[in-house]
Amino acid sequence: MDLMEPQTGIMSKLKGVSRRDFLKITRQFGLSSTMLGLAGLTGAVTLPRLAEAANSTYQKRFKTPPKVTLKFGAATINERVASIEHSGALTFTQDIEERSDGAIRIEFIGESQICGQLDCVKKALQGIVDIFGSSTQNAAGGAPYYNVLDYAYVFPSRASMYYFFYHPKSEAILREPLRQRHKLQMLFAHAELRGLMLGKGWEDKPTVTSVTQLAGTKNRVTGTQLGRIAMKLLNLNPVPIAWEETLDGLKQGLIDGAETWSSAAVHANMVPVMSQDVQLKFFAGCATAAMRLQSFEALPPDLQDAVMESAYTTQLWVQGCNEAGLFQIVGATAPPLPGTYYDKGGIRVAQLSPEALKEAEEMCSPQYQPDAWASWRERLDAWSGGHDTYRTIFDVAREIPLDREAINVEPRRWWRSDVA
Image (cartoon, rainbow, N blue to C red; front, side):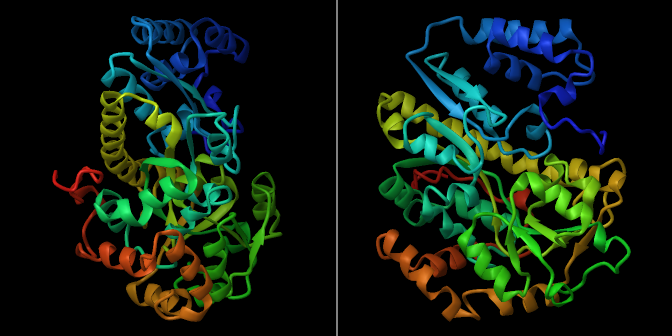
């Protein structure tokens, strides 16, 4: 792993392949077949190995004509990103094509070639793509109901997030309102909790043990409306800054930190400008994929079933692989495991104590600061059809022990409440 690697796309893995040769292979076999073939390769990738993998994948995918072709706009996703943040886009693509025996073919368009984090959901709503992938926080700009996941400290752990996604009540509280209001069929999501990635200005300062140490700092915030409420209550001064300017802002000390989650910080090449990963865990961090409802309902029943089974299979894969990646690739432990990105970059992971997390929760959560959240709670409750969205998610998230590991959350087919 090269921490100072300037390339952020799939070319970062192709040490023996020029960009010109890579584009030549994609023209011959298609971008989807090339990326899926590349995803199955390990070690150094040479031009003959890549061509063989792309050809093999192409032959497998095109052995039968499809009944339907779906366009998947996956924002920043490429093979490199997928090897760090295991959010499942490529896994779903491969699984649904195999499960449907080629009846469904996915035209996978990643690396923000057709849409970016802020507009992929809009492209799905417009029918430009059939499936989109982005963070729920960025998707909330075009589909505001995604804000329902962003109540501060509604999720006490990553395990509680997976438990909620599998829970039948996620249909009523999350998925059905997305269908009704935004015509989106949610497929799967990865689960992390957001914290603050502090820049080099904090390199020589003590490891953060309380959010009060960060009072008055300036921190880059995403487009999340509810996240801004929490940050203001925590005295973290949310500053909207373009993502492409965030790295330079951290390096030069123009901002103190950036609000995001651990694997996102690594795949976005933030490690060289970071000093501490403060595990504030104050609201959800979810890379998700959803399908345009019109595209889903246009499928015959057997292919609709296949899509849901592939979404379930992908959710299982994400649950296990991203948890492993956090420890073994990212290094989100204290101290980071040897050889991880955080270890090589000298990043300190500030794991706040239960008392410090409770302190932060009391400063900003709807349970303790109800007035600050009242208008958004009312809005989201109305959009949900009259449910108490915060209380329902809060209660479901605490049906499992607080010390349950995320990999030990029992999976369920959420759309079939009668089936485990």
